[in-house]
Image (spheres, one colour):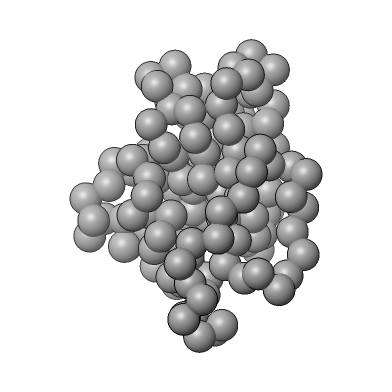
Length: 140
């Protein structure tokens, strides 16, 4: 089972949110999740990456997968098991993150969302997932 995440890049996530995310990811693993597709941008993606990596000690078979929107940018590849560049080569650069986020939803079974306001990329990704009838786990 594949899982992806959406949350705001510019929001501080406190200890309660970190614990809720950790418990959610653990439960998903216990129900068959193995691949975690992560965008690699902003605070929530960072939190998701660290959560998945911390759970590898207990579940060494899970994978943190970086899904990059650009080929000409630096990412912290060492934090991930591998990376994917979706078919975005013909997408204008200003739409690359939006299209990558849609690809994440299209290629995941479940979306873990921590969306606090109705605008921005996280809100658009959540709305897209709802339209695609993806299972969504909300982190309050």
